[in-house]
Image (cartoon, rainbow, N blue to C red; front, side):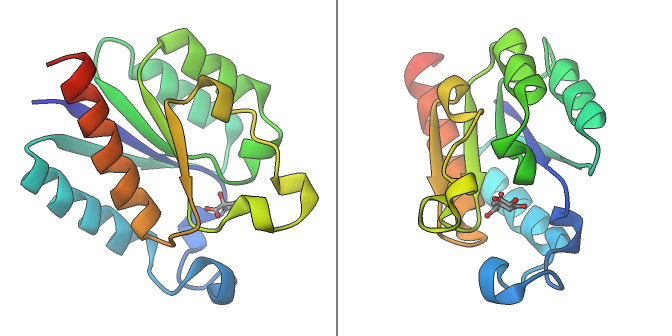
Length: 148
Ligand code: DQA
């Protein structure tokens, strides 16, 4: 049974309240519940973690080493700024899927670049909360193909 770490970056604790026109009305708790349900149907386990602090996110990524089989991460604004998160993902070497609720490529120019994308298996963005579910499914399929 694959063990998947879900990681939510800064300000995602405010989902439901935060710019609902961009990020939707679903709360982070309900996204985590949806992922737990999806994980059951896929036969995998998920653990979710959220922090507003870059260092805490690095610590969570480091802790996946030897404990988890893959990572689904929405790095929030750190997507566009954080070499530290990118290096942590590269360091643990686990298959990682980058997800975003919004389509970062059709928003402000500063959101077009991701430090995470080059160390991710792939990126899913623009489908609201569904991006997470698609990301989890894509990761599990990737693991089934590469580490059956
Ligand atoms: C986000 C997109 C980022 O640009 C932004 O800073 C976020 C959320 C998304 O899920 O669409 O905090 O990662």
